[in-house]
Image (cartoon, rainbow, N blue to C red; front, top):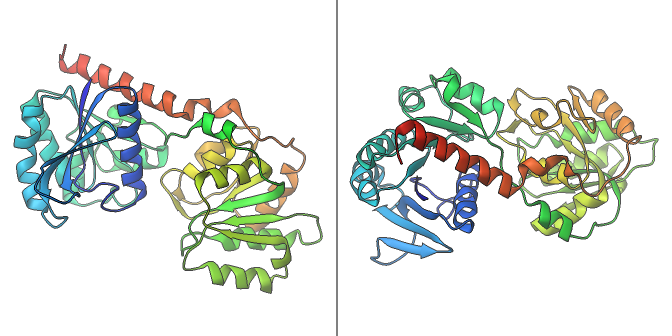
Length: 353
C-alpha cells in the first residue's frame, strides 16, 4: 500500500509527543514493507527535495520551518501526482488539514487525520474547520477523542488507537533490582511529583523504597521537598535513563505511579504496566492516564494524596510481576494492524480498488 503522510513539522524538527507518535506510525508501516512517503518541511541540507531514510521517502514541500504559507499552497500539487492509496495527515497546524483535503481530492484518495492533543485541540475557527473535513480521525485516547468531537468532528468518524510499545523488547530486557514504587517523567511544572512525595510521606513508618526517573527544571525543587518531608534517604532520583534502562527498572518495580496533570496518552506508564507494574493513577481532568487502569484488577484510580497512599498499601497485596500479557493489544504489530484495517475500510468506502 502507498501511504502519503503529511506533517509540516517532523520529529527531526522538534521532538514533541505529537511528532514522536507520527514518526512511530511511519516506521511501523515501513517495517511491514509498505510504500511510505512523508510530505513535510525540508529538514535536511542540500538542494535535494527528496530524502530516502530507513525505508521512508521524505518530500521537502518547502524549506524552513517559517515557510508555512508556501507549504500549504504547494502541498496539493506536490502530493497529488504521488497517487497514494491513503493520505494520513497530522492535525497540527490545522491549516494543513485543509491543504491535505485538497491534496487527497486531487489524488482521489481518502483522508485520515491524526489528532494527538498536545496543543492541537484548540477552539479556534481553523481547528473547527479541520475537525469537519477528514474521512476519519484517529486519537490516542478517549480524552482527546471527546475534545475533537466537541470541536465539530462527527463522533462516528473518530477512533481511538493507542501509542504502540514493543512487548518483545520488554521480554528481552533483564529486570533491575526490586523497588516498591517508581515514577517516570520529565520533571517540569506539569510533573506534579509532589502528590506522590506527600503520599509516600504518609507512609514513612512503613518499609518502602522509591525511584524517580527523569530530569528537568523542577528536579532540585522536588529533591528539596523530599528532604523537607524526611524521606529523601528512601528515594533515588535516577535522572534520565535510556528506554532499556527504564524497562529494566519497571520490571523490577512493583508500583508505577502516574500523577502528572496533563497527558494525551500515558506511554511511559504503558511500558511500565506491560513490564508487570501495578498502576496507580491520580485523576486529572487533562490527563487520559486513568483510561489504562479502568476495569483492570491491577490498577487504582485516586483523587488525593491520602487515596494515593492507601492505594500503594493495597498494591502491596498483589503479586510482583515482571511482564503482563494483558497489554498485547498495545504491541506495535497490533497497532499497525489497526491502522491497516482502517486504511482498507476507508478505501472501500471511498470506492478505491
